[in-house]
Length: 481
Image 1 (cartoon, rainbow, N blue to C red):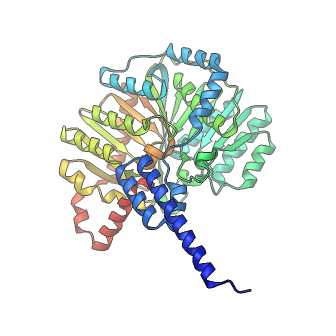
Image 2: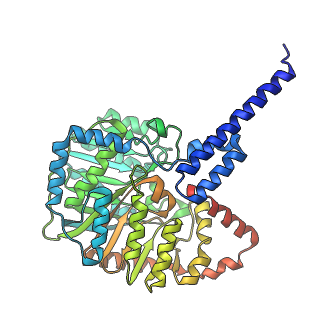
Image 3: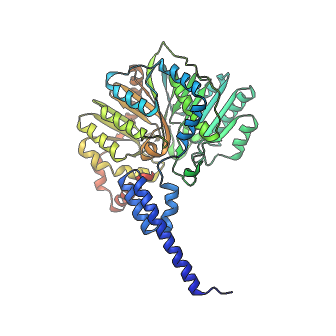
């Protein structure tokens, strides 16, 4: 039976009116909720002009606030308030005042997370995949009670299988094991890999970033943390995921340059708390773990762990980094695979350079994400004008996330110098305020600088028009990169 043309026209007209009305409603939502004014303008104009296409994209990519995470933790804290209070009281016993230059960071850190600088820590750098994996596997082999392992990317390859076999061996010994991964970062992880772990009694879970009514359609949120905790006595954190590429076995990105760290002391409990919170969000189960702090009084480093994410009441990651940059007096060295700073971070970097601070930023010379690589060129002109030094690491792909502030503090963790880490990802950084560790980071970065080439920032002016256009388009997409 043929449908009357007038009926079709009426249906189409009604649908058009409804969709455009929805576009206007979504545009109003964007104006009220999108983080930056530029983003709000871009979303609202697009939603009004092309609602059929942009409304679904807004559902998937438009939100920067992760709903439900903090509320779920608040309820469980109420149920277990005695344990929570006891844990924080024990941590408070190791609270220590950082050097005078970092006193304001102490206030900021406690405001964001309730976690202070603590004494009694021991941190050691782990450089590149072989050293890191060996130390992690040795720690797993030494476990006598439980293992907490969290990774953004887990690959079903030789390295991934080495970790799988190590975990299964410990599970057969009766060790409790909890394995948390990010579904987007580990999208290639096979079901057989997960099943083999589960069949041997290992608790395995994705982070479930789309869990909850407000997050259902969102693909923007990722858990980018990489944490290993063994028995509540030793912990690892840094840039390395689990896979062959982190051992330099990806031909296009080989050799792979990365940095991790091994920790003892109160920092172990703060990293453990970060894992336990993420596990509770994903599974609604409170893990029984060792909260007793085993301090290393011999090395006795001052340290701070900062877990951040899109569920924070304030934009903790961005604010902490901006404040840390603003505190620098003589030196600010940063190594990051991605350079897509927001306006506040870029302004802080510029002001630091204008104060006479030695600002050096090491980026990879070979990109693994083309848009991010192109976007970095858009900052060349601004950096050239005020003396920021940019380097491209040429000996393979550099993936480490390092910040060195004066002679006062060095940070190692998972935060990239980009919008995604600052506003969309669950991240964690560990900062050490102790001269020997700072010197080891300085020495490591000097080796990296020797393997890098200083960029003539004016070279962007000599690029062809098509390249400059690609760079500017990528700059427009910075909220999503």
